[in-house]
Length: 310
Image 1 (cartoon, helix red, strand yellow):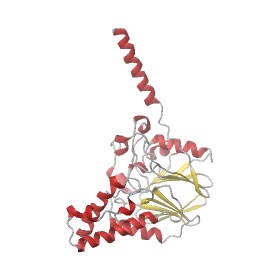
Image 2 (cartoon, one colour; image 1 turned 60 degrees about the horizontal axis):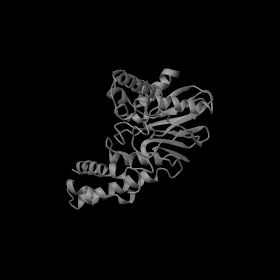
Image 3 (cartoon, helix red, strand yellow; image 1 turned 45 degrees about the vertical axis):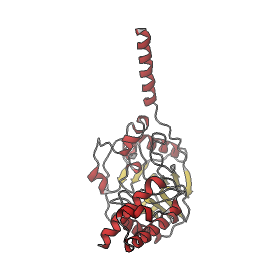
Image 4 (cartoon, helix red, strand yellow; image 1 turned 90 degrees about the vertical axis):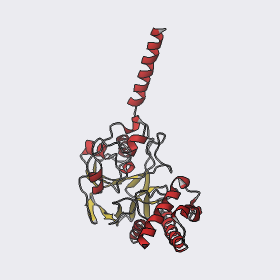
């Protein structure tokens, strides 16, 4: 009986080891959204053990001698598999990785590109100031072990505080900071003027409700105006499947209506504990994650606007 039990425990241990040894299969397939631009578009839900963080949009831009990457994704394994998929399109190194903001589903893949190519990482100073090697961020807590394995937190190499214009392998890029809290403390969007492609990061989403837990309603409205000032044909949100010219409409309508209704509620004397019952944003109730995220967005916006009005 003891021998049988010991054998069962050994078999179970070996089974568990084999599960963790085999990397999570993200089943990544790039979508061509413009000439020389491919994106991996994530599912319309939050990060989970089932999707292993593949709910974010990450994009490759092919230049004459390398790929430029906008947001590397939630893990080393995701980044490795994304590069493998893109290698079937062109066998090029990744020399430049641009990170749009500090939420870790967008940049924990950076260490793969640093390890494999010594890529230059450009992004928010906030990451360097608030994250260090060994920190267990949200992805470390949520993703399964075979997805998050090998993932490391590394420093950003360049942290611009003003618009940066770059030409890389014949492709022109503008990396534009919002200059105030918007989706997070420090956000950038990326614009390709010749291709008329705009990468919004999480300054805009579609098909789902945004999480504005670290952001500002007024900053979001400023960011939308800044992005609208650019002439684009392709608009890639940080989350969402629509990359067409109207891909920002959802975000613009949501934040504009939210602002208008919060102002009206304050004018009408609505109290903080009543605001989510008064401002419901029901036009968006069919969007993914509405129940989970909308009430807090409304509550936080009320606090921000009330304070600004005072």
